[in-house]
Length: 338
Image 1 (spheres, rainbow, N blue to C red):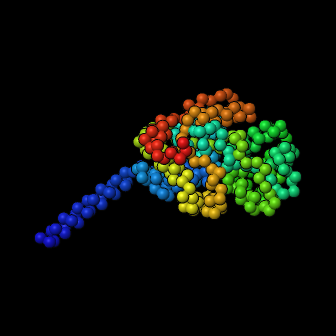
Image 2: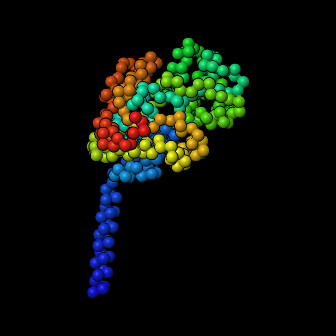
Image 3: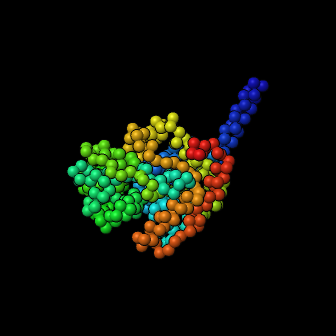
C-alpha cells in the first residue's frame, strides 16, 4: 500500500513538472535588439530582471554597435524588435523599409518634442574653444547620420556658423573616446557615458555644450508588420515588459543594480561610470503627439540635407494601440512621469 502511495505521489509530481515545463516552453521567444550603449538599459534590465518573463515572454538581448547593424539584423530575421532613432529612420522609410514602431526605447518624446540632455560637445585643452561660436573652423568629430550629428548641425545653424563653417570628421561610436584622447579632433560630439569618459580621460578638457532642447535624442522599438501583428498578444506583452522595466530603471533606489547590469552589456563601460551618467538619460516608453512632432522635425532636416525628397506621415510608421493599452491598464508604471 505504501509503495502504491509513493508511486501515485511521484506520478502526480511528474505530471505537474511536465505541465510546468510545457507552460515555460509555450512562452514566445523574442530576440530584442539594443545598441551597445546605456540607451539600451530598458532592454538589458527587462531581460535580466525578468520583466519580459513576467509578462509571458522569453526575451533575449541581441546587442549591435550601430543602428545600421540593428536594421540589417532585423531584416535578416535575427532580431524581432529593434530600436531606431528618429534622426535617420524617415529616410529608410521613404526608401521602402516596412516596419511599425510600437513603444519608446529612449528619450522623452511623449512630454515634449526635444530631449537631448544626454548628448553634448567635449573640447580638448589648448583649442581656445570657450563657447559654441569658437567652434568655427575647428575639426569636430561626429558619427555621421546619428542624433549627435543632427545636434551638432542644429547647434551650428542656430549660432550662425553653419555646418560648412567647421571641419566634420566621421567617427564610429567605438572610436569616439580614443580619437578624442589622441588629439585627432579639436572637439567631439558624443552621448553619455562616452561624453563624461572623454572629459575624465583628457585632463583639461571640458564640455562646451550639453543638451539645450535642440533635437530629440529619441528612439522607438519597431518590428516588421508580420512580427507585430501575427501575434498581437506577444506584441502587447513586449510593450508591457518594456514599460515595466523602464519604471524599474527610473527608480533611484535601483541605480546600483541597473548600473551593474548595464556594465555587463556595454563594452568598455564600468558600473561606476554608468551610475554617474545615467541621470542624463530619459527612459519613457510612452508615445504621443510630441513624438510625431519630433519625427516631423527629423524629416524636415533630412529633406534640407537632400537625404529625403518629400515629407513622410509618421502615422504610417507608429502604431500607438499597444502603448495606449499599457498606459490605460498599468498607470502605476508611469506615475513618476506625470
